[in-house]
Image (cartoon, rainbow, N blue to C red; front, side, top):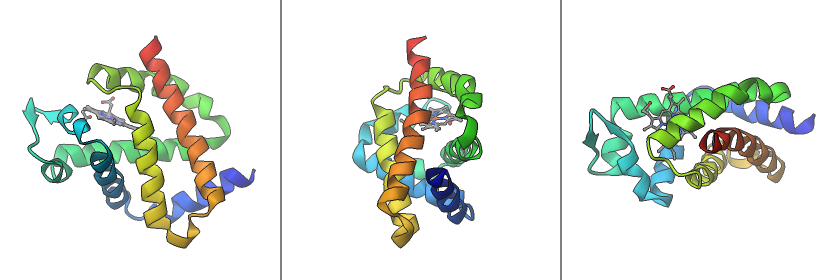
Amino acid sequence: GGQRALIRESWQRLSGSPEQHGLVLFTRLFDLDPDLLPLFQYNCKQFASPQECLSAPEFLDHIRKVMLVIDAAVSHLENLSCLEEYLCNLGKKHQAVGVKVESFSTVGESLLYMLEKCLGAAFSPEVQEAWSKLYSAVAKAMQRGWET
Ligand code: HEM
């Protein structure tokens, strides 16, 4: 359908530098909710500032992991249910590290912000709508990990 084509096409435009785009996403996430910072701890060490976190190699790995999950969702637009079990387990892992279900909405807002900044004029209301739906489906599957 048209929405799937819009998603593929817009994601393709961003495929050159996933880390750069992921940084825009997570910079926005910490602006919207600085309380998420303490959830990212590597070797039990807390980051003193979002800037410190955003430049840590382990955190950049997390950014790459997030972008890969989104990439997998884009690759499975026709059959997202293939990812159901993976996403549910991923949700469980996030519950275990102390993430609240509500924070996934803030991630969604940050994703749309990144798309708007990085796509510029190509970020049409139709593109926004299509991404909003896709992200909701991913977040819902992850949320099922909290309930089970
Ligand atoms: C792992 C935090 C959102 C994908 C982790 C870990 C933490 C974490 C602390 C374990 C350490 C690490 O691998 O870096 C958070 C927080 C989030 C968030 C605070 C926002 C509220 C997301 C989202 C996705 C995602 C939206 C994907 C759509 C992953 C993946 C892993 C991971 C793939 C690795 C899981 C594994 O080891 O099997 N996350 N995360 N994260 N996160 Fe997140």
